[in-house]
Image 1 (tube, one colour):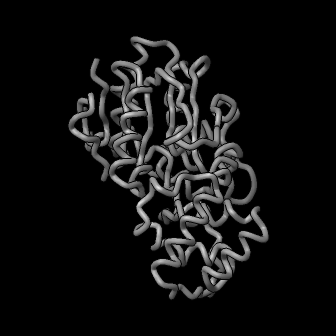
Image 2: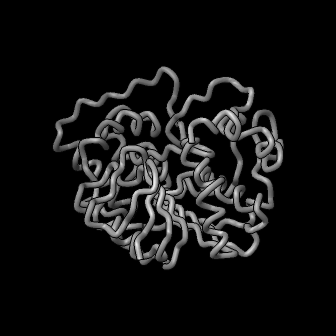
Amino acid sequence: MSDLNHIYFAAAPVAPRVRKAYPAFATPGFVPRNEAPAEELNDFLIYLLQASNIDSSIYRVSPLKRRIAACLRALGVHSIEEARELLEADRSKLPIALDAIVIGVSSFFRDASVFALLEHNLIPELLRHKDHPRVFSAGCSAGQELYSIAALLHERQRLEGSYLLGMDCRENALDHARAGLFDFTDLAEIRPALRDKYFVPFQKNKFQISPVLHQRIQWRRGDLMHDPLEMNWDLVLFRNVGIYMNPQSVHSLWEKLIHALAPGGIIITGKSERPAEDLPLTRIASCIYKKRG
């Protein structure tokens, strides 16, 4: 499908987009101290996750440790001791710390080849069998990919009546998704016709998602591992959510999502993620799997 990229996913004429963790709270020139022993780092991460009502046992600590410096910058403190004191004194800072540790990177029409297949093959095939599909974004971040799916459904006059749900453990990310307000540079991967149709200039370099998309998506804070999931999803976006989890937890989450997927449903993964071979999935293309049965 790469030969279609220049036709369907031409980048808007903007400055090169710098992909960054959401959100960015770092203060320029601020240099935190991060010289604590490994045990103290582990204890701080466990405290942060548990204080945010997240099961710390599902995560691999080693990749999260690399984000501690960013967490300290986000909080404006110089050590994990100061960070913990601040969080214990002011729990409203917990979402800021959590966003810095459990990063959520996403973009509109993320991975051109994946969305080309969705637009020209998978969604048309789905709509031949179901007028109004159910779409779930697991770990939706600020909602860019779910908004992208909504645009593709609207292009085929099937968004009305469809059910789209985004879930994330980070309330700040969901606030961003609900607001539907994005920088102009965030729109670089959207072809101009869709960009002009679904984004309304707001102020300066900010653009607002069109109400026709904004009103059709629901957002929910939740714990994918422990909260019950709704069933019979036709399309699930599960992209780079498991990269910080331990293998046992990732496999359990795969099983849970596939159980919630309708027979013949599609699940979209990240580039580095692979479902276990014992799962009832058939690989269609890179990052795209179909449930057997």
